[in-house]
Image (cartoon, rainbow, N blue to C red; front, side, top):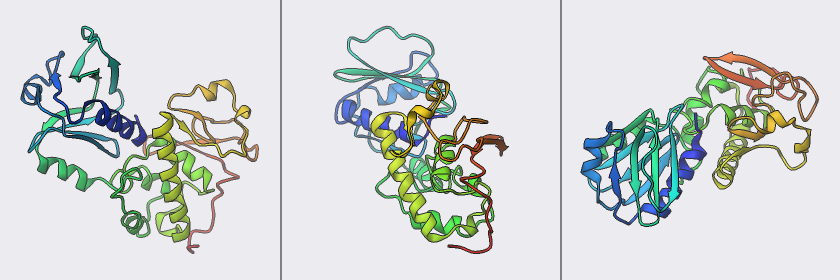
Length: 276
């Protein structure tokens, strides 16, 4: 599933290429046809992202809400406009580019109130200017759930997925099973700032690369560099491979039906009764 940097990258691209202009909107597949007719020809006022959700605002009570899910994908192509290929749920045509959306979990026309309700149920997004890390800390510091659960809980932190979870915990030497209430405030502040930096870098590059400069990326095998969603990483999808830092084989387990990767040496289980 695309992580938060992908949606923010799309939002910025759509803002740059389509916002403040009339946009032709259609649904070649037909599943979004009625809603597309309502916003077709209107001016796209702004595009924004929150976590893994994308919002196109066309005016009072006209918001196109999109969640890519596991298989959704936006293509964005320069003119001339070609005939739709495949099951295109939504097509946007602007002055210089057109974008086709295929396979999303959600593509719906909602009201401003409904959009606000989605924002309200989402957690703090490290890529949004209105993010409040203190609110996320308040939830984490009271929770007995492990960090592996809390970092993926979109009601706590919006936009962090499996890759960023594995990599952020590794970079800070944190045991994935450490309960949130055992995390120190200083540790949280450092973790949050790192998530901001990592996601911002993901937006700039369009991919996830998490290795610190001092760790040689050539130590990764080609299969790892070509792994889906992540090219230069410490733990994600490196099961059994030697840790780039210490050489210990990267561990793997299932956690709430999702793959969990960590280094048992760099991220040791620690005493969980005192906060640092």
